[in-house]
Image (cartoon, rainbow, N blue to C red; front, side, top):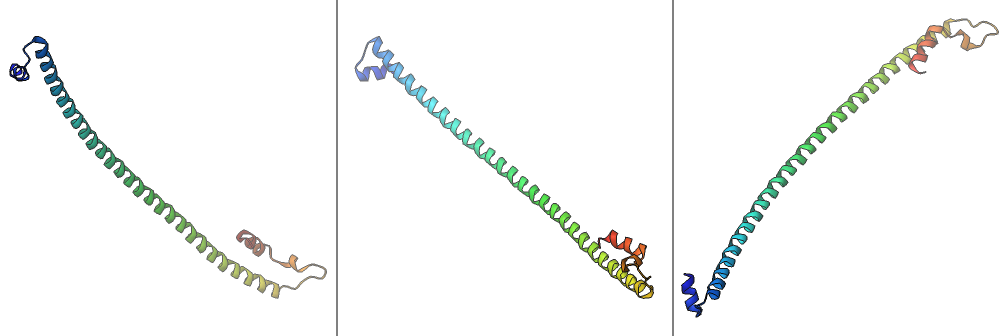
Length: 134
């Protein structure tokens, strides 16, 4: 085949044959290089798409975990708020009962002469009011 190409070009010498062989080798080498570059880029694109999908999946899972953690924290906050409100309601009932008891004892007690009214407050009632925060 190379001899045919050399005759068609009108070249009959060894140098001409080497030029034709070199050209054929360059074309074949360029074709192989081009094909391998194409396959490399194709594989790179596939790998890039795979890594991108993996990253997006990890980000989606991280977002789901973060939302679950936020819901858990919010549930803890809601429970603490409910406990606080319940404690306030309980304290209000206790305070009302103790103030009523204090008012009854003040009404029944005869103040001593020369003593301030606060001295006549029963010690148990005042202590209970102090523990509640009044």
